[in-house]
Image (cartoon, rainbow, N blue to C red):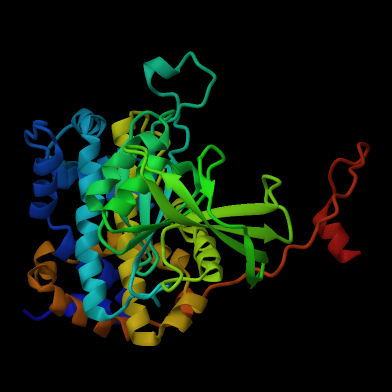
Length: 453
């Protein structure tokens, strides 16, 4: 099927917007979304309000088209075929498994498209799948619920474990915890079904437990994890200095860690990085454990890979600044977690767009010059206009495309993108500012008089 004249015009004027809508039409069809809901909803009743409808409504909020669920509903009331109360009831009752499946399933489809475009970033450890694991606590919500009105403490609606794959630059898996005070370690077992041979998990010390490291190794996968202070071990040899890196000196030794299940000792490499400067916590030495062989990655490479943990922290910051990942008005944990999951899906759509740009314009140029902030801004600005002008049937060609056809279409569109519209503006080093003393007798001044003096 050929694209309509209006869609073709949008392809020329705003190819980024067409790429995003094309991905949504292909990967996030109503049938696919409702199937995800049926598979993970644990028997929740649908009635007239379909999950796909609620998802589309929430995307209007997370992509900053509308400031709240109420505002989005008011604008699309006729299409909803349900009351606002029904919408909130649906959101508040969504099983967290639905949010998990939504991210996990759609990310696999998007990864397939990226592979077809050959748009992956350069692998940090060729031959292995690097996965960064970290937790994210959803920020405190407004005290709209009755149970929150008489407390002064911040109301936490939940937290998530997130797996980020730097090769695809997207979050490919989430594990949700409704209890905002829950220990992240309590959810580690839920990650194991998706651990595959040759995966390499890069993690902070919070995830350094005997059982989890055992489980990863048993599945033929690997880990690079900062050692927790309570992790018991026995040394097999004295420590040796093996080199220097930008941040300090690198030392290495073999140790054994006993299996928690049967006490069997496992040989593990223990790498110490002696830092030139202290961390924010006052540490001068970082201890990293890994079961990767020296042939796969030497000690300096392990230290460099651990430093890439900042990429998942950057993703969390971008979710907050590019999108509305934490909707403060959603006080119920299930609703807040769903809002976060929808924002992750939107982020992954943007990651796929950047992959298309990489395949057409080169990785170095896109990574150094293109800002996701401006891409997100254009998508928010154009969405409502596209919906007003274009009929749903005009997007049908994208829905019917195979993943190979979609990849070719995205590459074609990416060549039309004017990269200067999305140019990054990198900050220079921060200059220490001197706070001027205020004069109580003159609390304010006229800017115009100072300029004209």
